[in-house]
Length: 186
Image 1 (cartoon, rainbow, N blue to C red):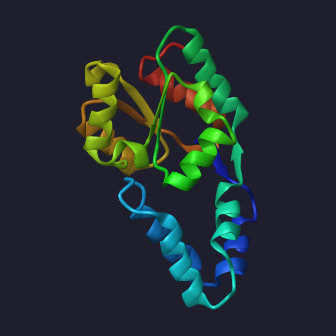
Image 2: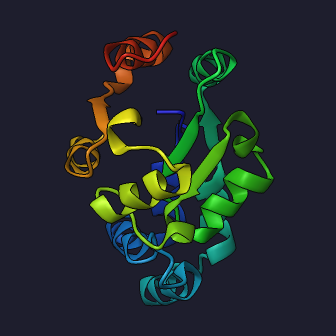
């Protein structure tokens, strides 16, 4: 909800990797979200099987080309300016997570950043949220979480967090409403 792929990414994936590549690439990514596996060799194998001649670097370039929602980050900044601790909790494999961190500088908007590949667990695992709570040193019920995936909201609630489902089409005003609904001052 803070970012999304640039329009046209799907056509680029198909052009580079072939018709079946998208499903296989995202399946390969899921295996890498908790940091236990490396995405690059998985993509190399898929691209070799596709016979398109596409490269991992071409795919990662598309994967990294994201649109950052400046209005949503402004909501985050308002919450942070109110004196509350704000954190990023994101499922990312190491290549995209590193790109978000080092190229887009996304971490500077947060007091804490929890990338699944570094945590060792991915959303919706309650262990992912348990790690966050332990790192923050707060009772789980004092942590508010907003996500656009119902499974991730359920996982956060199972771990004791206050969680709300964000509807992507609602934009930054929807994010503000989601947070306010969880008792976060906006």
